[in-house]
Image (cartoon, rainbow, N blue to C red; front, side, top):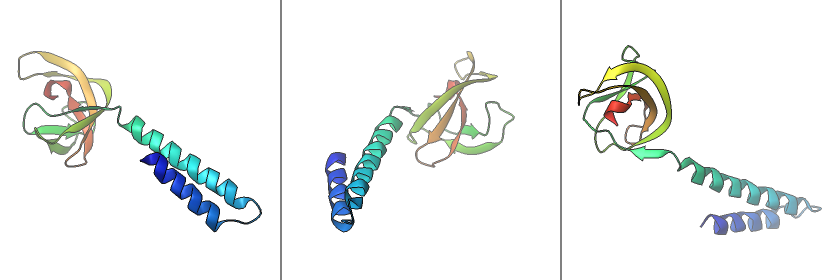
Length: 120
């Protein structure tokens, strides 16, 4: 799909910009730019997709319970785990404790924040 779109864009650019070889250069640029965007799109999909385990999970500005709450996540929202960091030690609902936090993107609300790994 991306290859067809890129070829069409390159062809249109070549037809429109037929000035002393500039069209071919621009067409090549458009093709390469589109190809790179497609690669970035595929690479972005390598983040881990998960969901919240319990309702009402706070998405915080930093990896600790004293950080400002930016939003709330719930099961079914789906999230993308961006990066893992060490943070405040939290007691999990199962009685265990974790100091690992994840920076996540809540796909439903589009809010990015930090969540203790206890709730993912």
